[in-house]
Image (tube, rainbow, N blue to C red; front, side, top):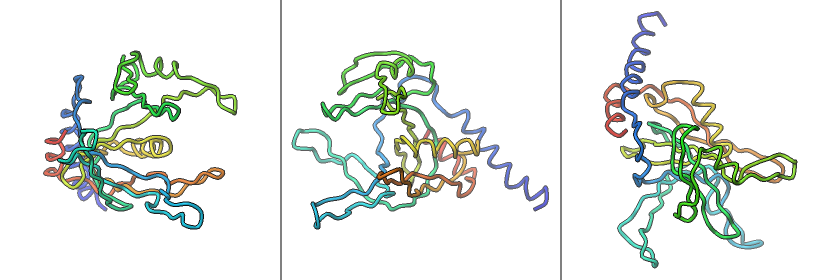
Amino acid sequence: MNKKESAVIVAPSNEALELLRNSYPIEEGYNKIQLPRLDYVAQDKMEGEGKNKKCVIEAGTFFTNKESAEKTPEGKTAWEKKEIGKEIEATIIYNRKQLKFFDQSTDSYTNSSIYDQDDEVIPLFCSNVKIASGTPAELKKRYEYTNEDGKVRSKLDDNKILYVLFDGEVYQLTLRGSSMYSFKTYARSTTLIPAQLTKFSSEAKEKGSTKWNCMTFSKVRDLSIDEVINVQDNV
């Protein structure tokens, strides 16, 4: 490839990235938008008992999850899930952070608001009731414990929130654990994520008796300027 050909490929991405850098929200309040979800099954979902036990959803499967016009028996908005396969291609237009913890003993969720910077003072909620506020580090410290290996951990897990343009619509995708670190590795490999098409897939992982699929990310191609303008309109 000569210098002229290289410039033709690189220039659109740089121009696209600059266009997007000026588009992202910097004010508070953007976390209140209710978006459809992209869901991901990290472990095989099994049904039945004994010899009748079988896998009904394989690990590594993606779903869309949208609000429907129907209501649950409790009168809440019902959500409709649709399986979309084990590999998808979409554009990651933005990413933020959130702290989450599910307490099985009380069947309750504790979570922070969605935030951007680690020095922000953010609220913490339990079952939709505000219970505290502080920086992410201060909130995580409230839930510290010592695990079996003698290491200090927090029940409040770090989560990465991705805003993804898929099939012409913006979705919210939550990452945690190995999938979150997989994304961080991908993000360090390029500064052009919002100006490129990304393939979402997974790979099998195993630790002791635990098996799961870790989400993986890889670049498909750069976006055209017209596609970047569409991304900008959705930011």
